[in-house]
Length: 97
Ligand SMILES: [Zn+2]
Ligand SMILES: [Zn+2]
Image 1 (cartoon, rainbow, N blue to C red):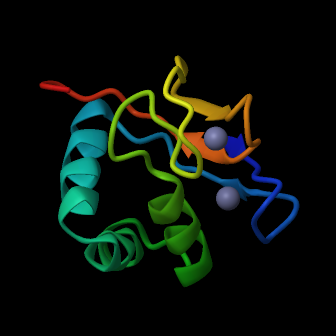
Image 2 (cartoon, rainbow, N blue to C red; image 1 turned 180 degrees about the horizontal axis):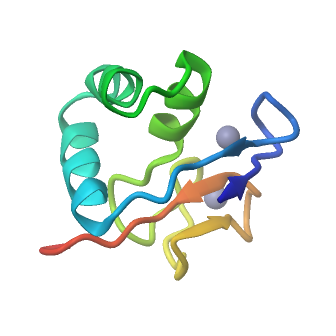
């Protein structure tokens, strides 16, 4: 699906692959360890460009519901722009959250 963030380039946004639940779980656990590692994994395993991989990794929420840019913590959809600051959030819900 296509996502956009008013704070980030490219302005037109990027296409995010349809990750399965197990892929989301794997990527999110990785991101909690290391953003760099996540970017590398997206490039190697999903054949995404460096720009796309970085864009995805930087917008993934480490804590479900909590905006990755401000202190808003009531995000309730998987892909949404924060109602408070407008930042894009890849707000995946994974098991054990
Ligand atoms: Zn952004
Ligand atoms: Zn926010």
